[in-house]
Image (tube, rainbow, N blue to C red):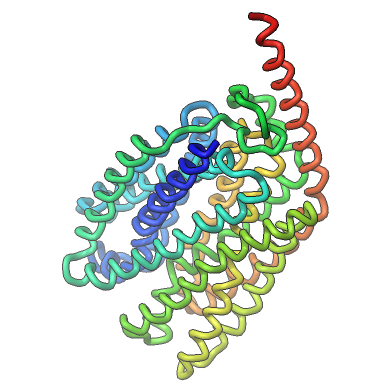
Length: 436
């Protein structure tokens, strides 16, 4: 048991490094819009299509990755995903034309949909009352990865060119592939569930089509899928267009962007862990806890963004202050959504369940960059960011409230199923000496 507890923290460290460097590579393009547009002679709408292409490929790959993770060894598949990340980034760096760049950048979406297996494996190392904090801790890597990509773009992109920066981040993917392959071990699916406590061995459970189809009969999951469809719109718009907004409409210099965005990203990182911690805290008191925390975070994020975007251009200090407050609230739902998906699904279909969640998110998110570029070209980035973010966050909070109302029943069903499995495992294990 002590060996497993030590090993699980090694896995957390490796996965944190994977997510940090992968997010840096994935989001790097959002910090290099002018250089890339100049290289290929394209407008904002065409640049938005490049981002949407990767999102569409990732969307298609989510169900495939989900099935593979629930069927085969998750660490080996994660190592493969890291290798694909490095390879496709290198291909993007050598693309000679806009058409080939559009295609090679789209291919980077293959590995972008590899996270469900990572979260599923973590769920087998940590029990239900700890997962929110662990997911929040891991998700700190996402804004930090964005900041790392922004720093690389601003510090190295102008001097060495965006292609060489891509070569660097691609190489890091190859290194992570080797590290994951040799250091991360798989765990029996369902090992960390409270009903399995005290069992020396846990049965082997693999993907089952009947159980997978049952995911679409869980009311709370269906609502989360719907919320996912609209919930990622704001993230995509902010990620890929906010720096451009600061440059072109607020007239920020590079050093001012680094200070403003760096501060916001550090606060955003805290929001992930705060959200996971609050979700775990209230989940111990009510099965609705995670969703109530999520709903509150989303609503507050929408309100604060409205006031932030309304700050006059000649008051950058107030803008940075309100942006920081906004950043604290907007990630609070993220670790709780993942934890809730796992709170209502059997271990052998958890990668699939989260893949469906992300599939729905990406169907909506794939249209967000192109839509934002379209609105920006005809009006302003200010209007594009504000309109898309506020409308989708308000709708998302309504769906989260409905999920909070229905989720206790689905949690109760899962706990009953796990008790039945645990009792069957104990009967089988107690019968082994008799059979011998």
